[in-house]
Image 1 (cartoon, rainbow, N blue to C red):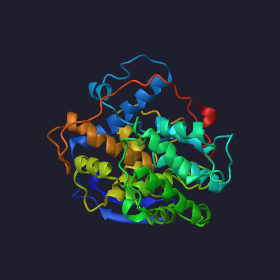
Image 2: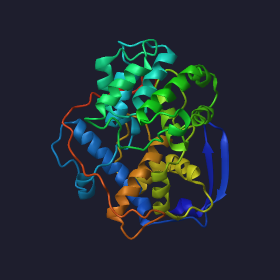
Image 3: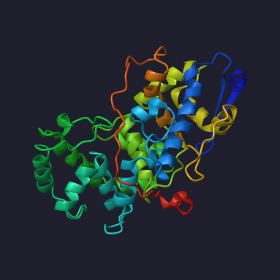
Length: 340
């Protein structure tokens, strides 16, 4: 790629960071082109499903067979539920403290069924919250079903809070975060990175989870940062980057993600791909980070000879149709709902 033969100037517009890096040594693999092709095909699947097309939703057999998240994180079923039914629920209080309580309660389990179980039993407000009652309901539930999503693994926080059951410690983690008036602190910060550092300081919230939580809170009225201001590369993204680049030419993982965000339109044009944005919203840093995670998986089948830094050889989850329709709705501050 011609751009990789020239001196790259990366500018993170929101954070005012300018990075000068000579990219002459940078080398891409064939997975680099697959990154953009996957993004275009997966977004095509999104719109084909949205428009009511029957399965298969694409000509790509890998995408048809295996489970991949949407290109835009906010389009995934769990994120959509969080935005519409948890954050912007008109039947629940809209104070920053109450909204943060709901986000934490939902995201620490990250499972729609767990939220709905709690909603049947409680008002789901911080004002009415009772640890013993919540703990009892969740303890009863785990004897029948899993109450956590398999999307990511959270620390049990047992060494910090001392409870035997994971969910008990996570309820105590929510209490700790709320009692520290975290909502006020978050609203006082000038950058998303400051918010990230605060959340990372709490037990069990490492880099990846703290960043994901910042993105979720940023959907709400509590924060209003650009999604292209700050990014953290998760383990999956690091794997995808190592498969797309045999040599990054000195760029860090974060700089690579910013680079991909900056060049997206040119790359789709170069490869003659018809990429449909999210009703006018281009890919943000969180989305390009997410695509690297998915390409890490995609390449295991598409490019099995390119291992990168990963030792995983197969994709665990196959695609299973969820017939429940989604009434797509995004944070009002994005100003795209009128285009749907």
